[in-house]
Length: 482
Ligand code: UDP
Image: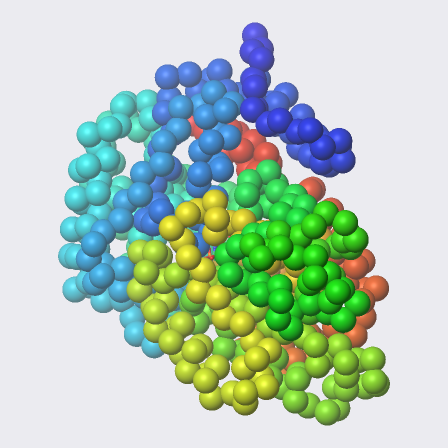
């Protein structure tokens, strides 16, 4: 027996419909069979923060689509007001990425378990016997110890981080987490290489995905794009932002930043001086400082100025770094320090370079507003960089690829799953080395045609592999296994 499953997506743009329909159709046809089997089962998604970072980004769209196809789903943020708890979990996060100058110690287990016990007890009051609980990342992973056996529930652990080369640090983190991870019925990782030995055979791979229709990824007209950037104070239309061919458009700008609807180029990026963009949490592993240093090298080294045209390109290029206000990212206690380190380095630069670098500590009060700003920035960037030194899987990379941007990514297992060097983007072999960063950025900058080709292939890759409809289908199949 099949039922009609309404996936609740309204598409009025024919091109977008044509682009998305294969994924939508696949979901719709399989959901008809799989969703009825989940009748009476509620799915609980549990993570540790409501804002900041890829997991919190994915959650609302995932849950809303689950509900639209008829699966009862809820999101629980199992956080804590204890900064010491998040100091421990950030240490585990860094250790799983194979970098940390300190280890996680047995003495820290008591606090880790205490917070997880409190959260587990609160969640237990909401659970019913046939529910499925999906716990995301190491922070709430310990809840299982206080949930397992209480009801005949199924538990899945979804780990979004990892590294392909295991070392002493990763071993320390996995040993700490072992008493919890082995209790889950099944585990999900973002790449095969991340699966630790003790979970082999009890884990599968699922790539994080984006929703092409949410505020961060939906198509924005040029008027809307410029409006968002001006109204949020990021674009000062009357100052030196407009490039010479379009500078007379400044006269057409209204004081509130809305453009008049005539004489506009179709590519919003043309409106601004070209800029390279990196979006991400203020985390050392995102390689922000190394990116600034690479940008500095590229701007100042005369050997990069091959000819007059390229010298002009380099002169014009700006660097925009954007991240969420750290006070809103409750599970990352290092954000404030990292941002200060970036500001300190910025202040040590020459005035000319300071003028070319924009650091945006984006407000998070309104999720929609924040997402629209990120969307507008990604749409306008000439090049998007994700100079991660470690990356489990960069959603920011997928978001930029969806917008046909050539992405330059750091050589990390996660980004290698998303782009192949010279096919959908460029890979920086050693993102911790500013020389490498400068070299790759400069190479891509001098080849506008190549940027276009890479951008087109990037979008095709996202359509084929990294859209949310595919992830929903993978979850349905996984739930069906139980
Ligand atoms: N992001 C955002 N607003 C910001 C900064 C970042 O919405 O001000 C989003 C970004 O667009 C991406 C997510 O945060 O969707 C970061 O996910 P990613 O996988 O790149 O990195 P993570 O933080 O999970 O390590």
